[in-house]
Length: 305
Image (cartoon, rainbow, N blue to C red):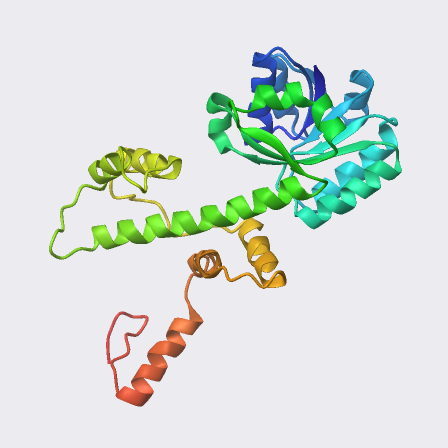
């Protein structure tokens, strides 16, 4: 099949390459000329504007968007609606909020276009092992583009999960679970590292053991093992964990539906804490302990009183 790819970052670029490796034709566009040139070297047809991308595609066209959620997606879809023809399909494979995708579906369908939202997981490993894809939209549109999904995913790694917006909703919850899993692993490894009775535990060895037959084995744990192999003490890595939106949206959805989700919520707040260079709330705690109990305060100079 032939498809257009908008956004050639870490995932969009690798997805372009994987599609080409599986015999599909890709017309590739990015605001970065260097990214477009690299895609062309990998076998894609280069496009230097959305208009050129649409012109290079044969009807009925399919355009896959891999740009940051929010305004970039809004603007891209708005421009595409003025360029595409009835019967063409817009696919958002990024991390858009599901409520935005519901509205986007209404907007493109009002123009006679088709819509699919694809929650995409796999990160930088997707090129090699494939992408897990949770797809929302109409069954006939999904069926038409099935060969594209089959090429991108490992066996059994994709499917239509519901109507418009559901793909991004399922992926959002997936990422919320990911937050909780990562936090649990992080806390466990810190307990091991800080043990006074066993100060020389080999975290690389332990992750290797856990990855063979234990109930906590997972791909995330395999990645932890790889990280410890490269850098056993994680020297030089700042304790700074960015929050990209999906965990926050998962917590918001839990609140809206009155579903208790304390682990996911706490893992989100832990990420917020990592972004603080210094915590004012911790200063308040120290001050209060000093006020009611006379407990020592450690000043920023390092001295205690």
